[in-house]
Length: 216
Image 1: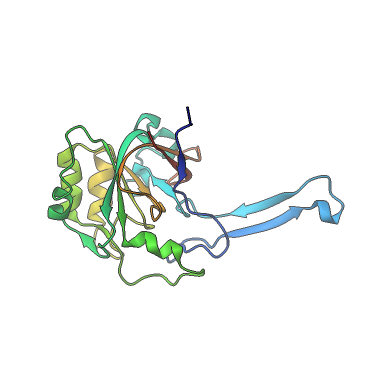
Image 2: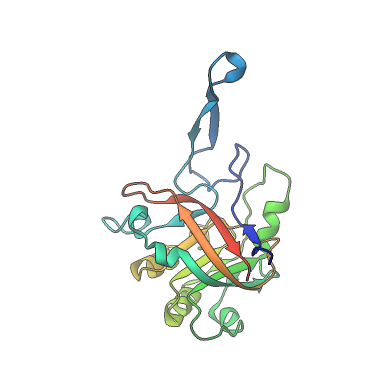
């Protein structure tokens, strides 16, 4: 019997990876090197807590709320649906999500949109003027459906500059886990088992993560 195939849907962290405007730049600096006579190779890594594939905890937008170390692992691992919105390159309304006709009981939803094609481009990638994201209405849809986790294939679930950040506030206030920066460009829509493991940073406002999908 062959093992279930594992799909890595994480972005590769490197100095030329796109970051959110104003976030810390990525720096990977060798500090100890075998080539220079040291016993091992050790580098210094400097990144923001929302670099690449990452998880947003409530404290990201709600002062005093739970940090990344308190996000439920039960929410971060389990059955999920990857939805086919690959032709969508702008704000996603509630009607578009309703048209997915999800079966009852779906708790984790990953949206494969036109965003995933950004990660196929040569780096560095200029920050796009337009990308697929949720709106206040589609965030309400997520809550109405009782989803525990929503994942998107760009660095934010919300439109850049959205006044008051209604999407983040609506979801995080209700305990919905937000996974951003997924790379779903090589993933066929359908059912999978998702595992997302963010770094366990005490009281962290975000957690860079490795995310995988398992078939079968």
